[in-house]
Length: 283
Length: 263
Image (cartoon, rainbow over all chains, first blue to last red; front, side, top):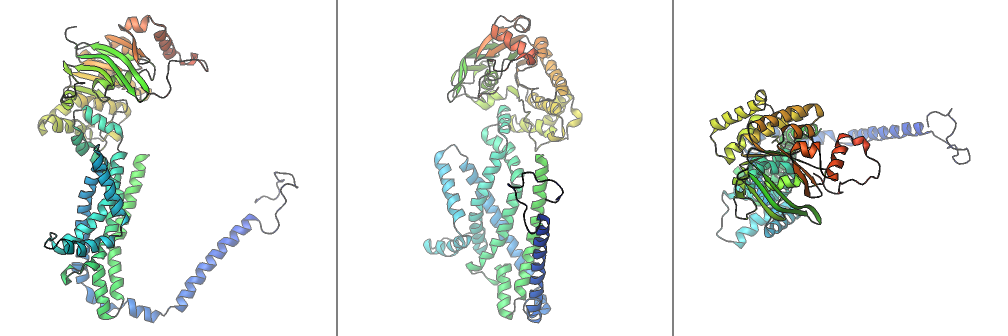
């Protein structure tokens, strides 16, 4: 109530004038306190932190230098490779499962539903262990094509497919019904209409969530750590950890982390750009 | 009328408990233009959609060009190639350019070569007066232009019959004329046309016959002069008077509209 000159809306007895601070004063006070807490926290951290030690632990230029070029040419390359193969497997499998989920044949729908529930419900790490340890033990002699690369692609793909299947299904269902009707009335068979008309439009709709899934997979590829990889198969996390223990220093962890951000932040920007564009298209 | 191009007999269609079509018989001869009019919920759009089996009839038979569509063993995709359909909401493929909207069905369905499909597309865009929009995307066109592209897309498949489902109902009034002009041109060229519409002027001038539907049955069927000019049935008169003067309706007046249906 900024204007105290105005007569009260209700009779004096029903709405007594508040004592103490006005609303504006309270607001100003609250904001002041928030800033003060922030400044105090930053100051406390700056004073309390042992800067020399931190720099020694995380920012040793010579250790960071020693990581190059391998951190890019080997570790980052492997991370990207694991991610892309996993994403591809997930996309293909996810598409199949999405179409099964939309099938008119009951058992297909149920199977797809069960798959999605299971693989969305399990930790990705468990899937990695399952692929890396349980499968070779349970089925001796079977070998997953591509060695570690194949195992990672499969494990990441299995997890990603469950999420992507739901995304793709939602995308297909978001295409207006009239599109299928128009295609059918032109003589397209249901399958051909799906491939030529519906799915291309569905992918336009789900491009942002799919890119998000790519970012998630990029990070999940670090779980390769648990498969036991050779030196040449190491990706960013494993590479960083190995060097960290070799040098007894945390700089490699920081560098590996920055390498992740090198990819994830631009990708995240792309997603936000696409979402904004999609918003505009709707208007 | 020798062999009818479209023949519908004893057609019934229910959506759950909603009995939309209650026994429709209709014949349309080759080259005939038939306008179907009636209040919303009368079943006219459902009837049209049954003619190319976008809706599966509950009972009754549908023939187009001598082929029974309601035969469970018929190759429905093959029959539909001969039936062009134009929708109220245009339903152009938004991810394709105008030209691609016309060429994709030709290539995928009719297996025409690239050059031939492009040529047919260009000819048909020319026919509807939109040759210069070939490379535009549908979203950049006005409603009237989109509907003309939709007509061109159907024509590119060389249909023998054209179905129009309220083709001008979603358009701004000033854009209706361009679409009707294209339809008039088609009628003059001798296309067999079944048109669900509220455009009485078009029905009066272009149609060979006007069919008035209400409550899921055909109430009146005759020349435009007779059905629109001198309707025999009270229900037709009532509908037409309401169409000419919507302001005359009174609150709470019982109309023939039935709740819960559309088209």
